[in-house]
Image (cartoon, rainbow, N blue to C red; front, side):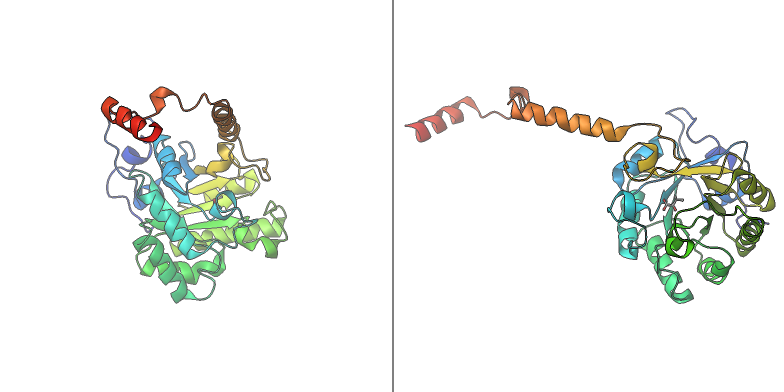
Length: 306
Ligand code: KIV
């Protein structure tokens, strides 16, 4: 059983979000509502965001969950992997997101080495994301071996989202960004990990780069929602990285990324138009400039030009 009972009909906040009229007051989405949303026919929408403008866009677009992912390192900070991201980075960007939206549930990623050095470090770092960043929950990567850390966070009243399959913080151990669970034993391990995390009390579980039939088995095997990225259509929700789905990231594009917009090209086109208007002195125009009162203008002219 989920350890996050919903207090009232959750479908009000979760299922209606994104489809309600502009006048409907939108209640903040809560952890118990997400935990109870075990419904692959009516999938949850999660998207990453890292700052004020991406948070506002995610909220306006109707996402139920915003993940302040440590993908921050690659799509915003320009690193080659997520490994360099620090707790301070995550706190700063989580705070920017939580200041800028009120409806989606904001979940903050625990970065590499923030929960690998012991349970008390993990709880202290998770606490910073909740107290300073104002996240409502944190996410940790890894299977059964994370159970002690997850239990300690739950003891500290910090809700936890799990993440198994391709866990990017394990890129060196895995030997690259590869689909996980393709062999029988590996698939069994993944199901066992999912069950262990669900019993430990995660309120939702990200499945990354997992074959669709295996993601379906995992989804059927646990009573908290699965949220897929490269895990096929049978999960209880889907997540994509903001920059990937909007065409703002030019790095490697895995096959599961669909571009729903091409904002990168639109941005470059806008900058080209701006540059050309500046160089031709067509920008700024009179209407884009401030004027002086006539008497001040005349006096200044007389003073400086004699
Ligand atoms: O950091 C991130 O953006 C993530 C998602 C891809 C699930 O962990």
